[in-house]
Image 1 (cartoon, rainbow, N blue to C red):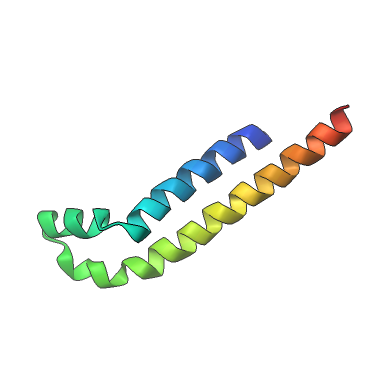
Image 2 (cartoon, rainbow, N blue to C red; image 1 turned 30 degrees about the vertical axis):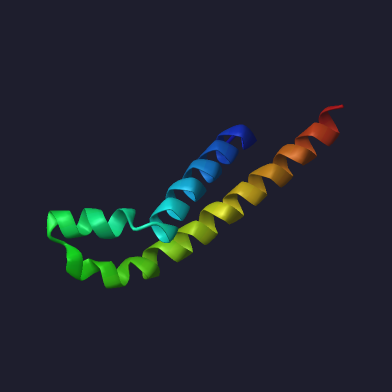
Length: 72
């Protein structure tokens, strides 16, 4: 997979996970849909996904930097 694709996926996933972690977007959405009982379990999913996407972003940035050094 290209490092630019990994970088885009990592940044997009990080932004979406951060929005859902630090703002009540999913809490309001789950309450409106009737799934408010699941709100307690959001941290079990959102925090690992945020960490995964941040790690993916760092990996893609390091891979892109290595490609830039070898490409010159």
